[in-house]
Length: 333
Image (cartoon, rainbow, N blue to C red; front, side):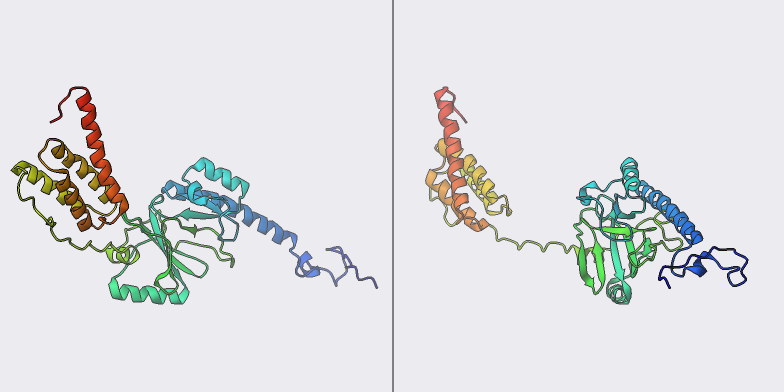
């Protein structure tokens, strides 16, 4: 007997076959009705995806497409290309109609997201709220394949990056440089992302995160240790007049208290200013050089070769200006 499947027409008069459908005859193979239903669902899904993507863009969320039933971006450099431009979004979804939808989190979209993954994530979140206080009650929350997510407004002036388990086990954060998949996308496990009733971003606003959460994610920089007031290691025994001495002390104080990142430039500026007094005969070059290096040591850069070079350049710059002026017969005061 041939192993080839024997085709039997449906609807013949033999009572043994009467009433049987295509699915009855070939189990496991989608029948025509199932194929048609699947196609209708696919078309409805693609229209729904595009409509949702445009809706999110209308909120100011930067959108980009995700591979169908996956979590991986379709676009290269999606961080830069995510957009609110409806024209681009339509073009992307025309190429991949059944693509999932994602939003690039961060300052560009004005949102950050806390990802609560399963029971462990819920336990971590409950512990966090007991210790510090509750999160906003009405933040938009979406259910995912394995848990749920809390959407919060972006905190101006703070640096919130992506993090995994920084807040607790299975409790992740999506901030600058991150993204999350949005409803009505389909999770790899086949479940749909969805907004619980009354919790979509069109129904309620995203509240800013509480201060305690920001401090956990973006701790404020510790205050710089207070420096002692600068006192030069020496004072000229005689010579400088009162004005010149005050000018020397003021410039040296600026150098001594200069913040990190601006110390060498402050040395250069101080050298130029004080060398004018050297040029006028009010201060000696030795007093200025010793004072500047003393102040630079107080600021923490006195042993830096660049600092010493800046000091020399500042003096040479002012000296060059003076010589050029003398050639033109101009007296600088």
